[in-house]
Amino acid sequence: MFTKTMKIFSDSKNHTWNLGTWVLLMLILLAGSYISYYARNFTDSLLLYLPTSLAFVMVHWFGPRILPLAFINAFVTLFLWQAPGPWERILFLASREPVIVFVSWFLCKDLVYTSRGLSNTKSFSKFILFGVVVPDLINSIYTFNYTFVNGNLEKVSLLWLSDFITIFSIGLPLLHFFTPVKTTYSFKLINIENK
Image (cartoon, rainbow, N blue to C red):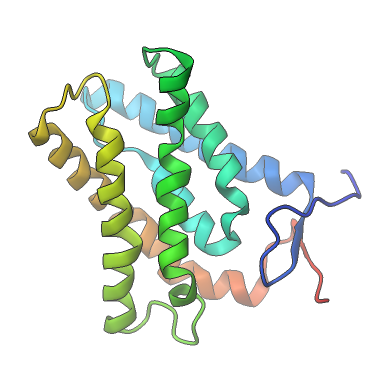
């Protein structure tokens, strides 16, 4: 393994990542994309998209440094699903995931790491509103531009609801139950330097 570490989007915790961390997180996002793709083939719908939920969790654990990984994953996913259109449109649609994940992190970065985390009703309700509902509404702007939606607001609202349920049922339990473990024990691939 490479001994050099990369400092990217340094946050207040001054974490440095080695190459193994980047590869592991990218593989997790890509696995979520492939699972969503094959689940779509079985159910003949696009109502389960795991990478957004996983990216929500990752951004609240690792900060905005995962945004390039979310963008690369979204770009690969669009090619996996053979999205039509010119490069500009593909780049616009690929920016969906990093934008909504960043909005969630920006609005709720202090909620997850407080002394109680998401353990009380007030912080949980704030996180649902600002960390899930608002980014999911921004996601609806992107969804409106998908070719299979064709500006149909019923489809947009159905996809909004499916994204909300996916984030609520996968992302929030991961954040609630595993954030204390992550902050207490850290992960082996991340080198923490206190400066």
